[in-house]
Amino acid sequence: MNTKTPFALLLPLIFLAGCEEDRIATLCDTQPELCVGLHTDSWCANERNAVVRGRDLQARMPGDASLHQLMTGLDSYHKCLEPVLGIEYSKRKERKNDKVEAMINAREELARLEQQTRESDYPHLQLWHWHHKGDLAARMRFLNQADRPAMQQPELQRALAQLLARRDPQAAEQALHRALGLYPAGAAIDTGIFADLISLYLADGRHADAWLWSRVMAAQDPEQNIDWQRLQSYAAMSPEQQADLQRQADDILLRLREGRYLR
Image (cartoon, rainbow, N blue to C red; front, side, top):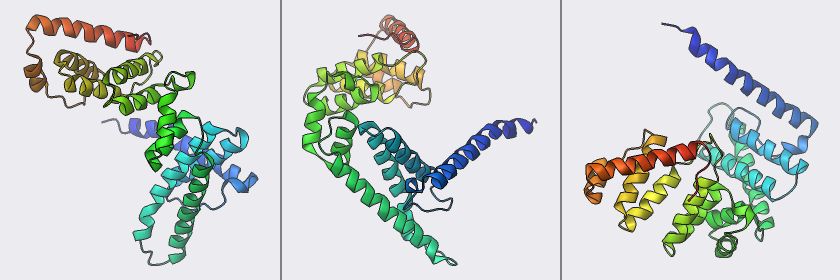
């Protein structure tokens, strides 16, 4: 048994993690304002470092995109620290207080940024305010700019489809296909888009389409647990029809892999 290979594979990861820690430490030394209010030990280190990177990006490239990244980092950091409230340290209680203070600071900074971005036209921030705050005005602004260039990103088109699914399933379907068409060659595709298409087709009684896209999803993610017997009983297809749909699925997969999917 070759025991050297796993260790060799770990070396680049260890090296990269060390470089990242060194970079964050350098940022904190040269620009202490980027690290103010954060805890200092190894707990939630990745989440803490994401906040530092977000603050650094916002300082260098201020704008809605960097604000969204910082808010995402602060939210993850706060959630990572939340369990600390239920932990008792037997030797150094101040360690707990340090993290509790950091969590409070993160919550306050996030609340300030949420207030600052309430009227933003940046789609990711509009989704933030809808998903995190239930802001109906932000949801409407997001829907109203469905055709704008800023919305031409796969994750935004999928979010648009999810908002449209109940009131306009046809528009939701179009948004999902548009999302797939936005992926370049070789990109990792969000298989949730396939799942959303399948749900739309099943709800509309389009069982052959549901079967087709289940084949696509299974090829993209073999670990998906798909009930083929149930799908086939819905579609009631002959072997010839299944073979034709499989050919269509193969063609879709080829176009997706080559970044030329259009519908």
